[in-house]
Amino acid sequence: MEVKICGVTQPETLALLGRLGVDFVGFVFYPPSPRSLTPGEAAALSASHPGGPARVGLFVDADDATLAGTLASVRLDMLQLHGAETPARCAEIRTRFGLPVMKALGIGVAADLDALADYADVVDRFLLDAKPRAGDTLPGGNAHAFEWSLLAGRAVPRPWLLAGGLTAENIGQAILASGTAGVDVSSGVEISRGVKSAARITAFTAAARGVVADRPQ
Image (cartoon, rainbow, N blue to C red; front, side, top):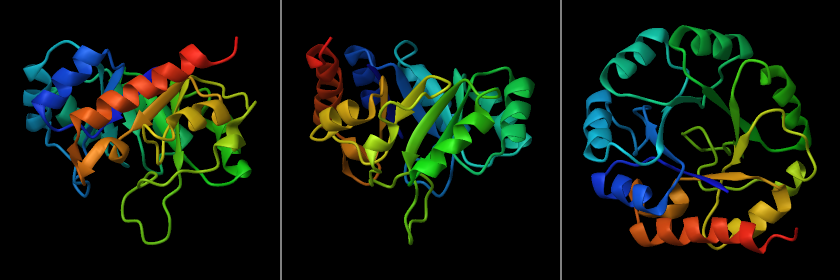
């Protein structure tokens, strides 16, 4: 089970992810988010624990200058595109910057999954998240889940992570209902908006990986 912890801002949290063997850490480069980092802050954070998870940079409809400026400051292993980027824009970014691209898609109803085919040839991964609700000011699930059973038996053409409203308490149900082999969490491991909890990260990671051990063969 691949685990991604997104919106990390503190060195002690990054060090914990290394000890837990978490696969991916998300650095948010979107100023409206309470978890946003400047490129300089992300570089210092990453340098505080050089090993550990692969670094994923989260961007929302970023232009080339923003992407280039960020990459000039901090090493990233993958670019997560969480806005309204078209397949053509994803392909352009992937080619220009030479990094794997993970495209986030908001899911609310089964028809939203049709977009997978449009992006399949131009991205390396998908992140399937809940659609923002009326009144939400940020992209993504905003601590809300979608109907995980929409993904049951669905052939996703690239490796993918499940996101949106996940916690240690519901992660087992989410994995079994969706069939995912990877999960992404941010607010579900926080004690307040933008503040991560070591205990919640530890519990979430253990719960997610425990489902794999218990899953029928």
